Length: 299
Image (cartoon, rainbow, N blue to C red; front, side, top):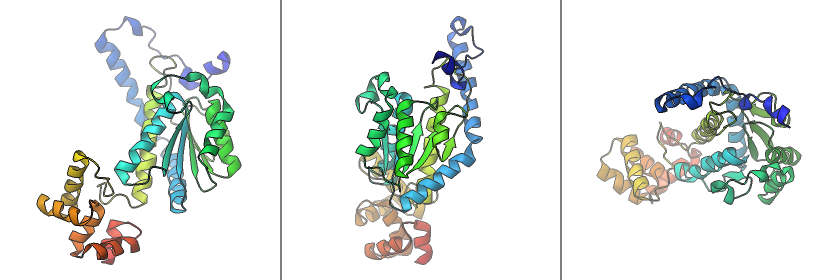
């Protein structure tokens, strides 16, 4: 096992063999220099990210869902991205789901041994009723975590789309996946600490997957999150600013429109820009599939 581990890019030893002798400033500079490599690695796999996004969009348009599956840092990143989708894009909490080996406890506490049970990954998908129309993204820096392999194997058995997000080329996960996203960021400053560059790369890719998919699904107008759920003071103020920026109206007018639109920024924008009432604006949005720009064109 140790020999196979040493063959992984993410388990390689970096050139910073005198790391423990450096000053605080020097250590920070080393980490920052290495982190600069991450977006470049992600940029090299944009075609693969595009392929995954297209599958996610097609799935959601057909009534499917997106599942992230991972262990440790990878699992936590998946849960984080999934949990941000409802408030940001106004989607139901079940549309994007994060599954982590060990469940809720593993979000805050290390339970590393649970990632070794391949059957648990398969069971996690079964418990959530994953279907052939869904997309399952397995996340693991090594590309060989048993829990994630079990989930991807089950996804393929069901007929769901299987995507691998890894940081090593030619991994076991890649052999199972229809699409493999592999930003190879190289060895970590601290050998094997894949919460660093590998984790950063995974976070960037997850951001790209959901944000781009939601833009393609009409959850964004211009560069504004028009389906934001105004559920607290900050988000209520953000919704008001979104309506103001999208229409050029005053903040007072934006607030009044939001009240008439039951707090829905997208609806308020269409009402203000078309001069119509709530019912008419709702009809325009429905006819346009939820896309503000198309609703305005039709109106």
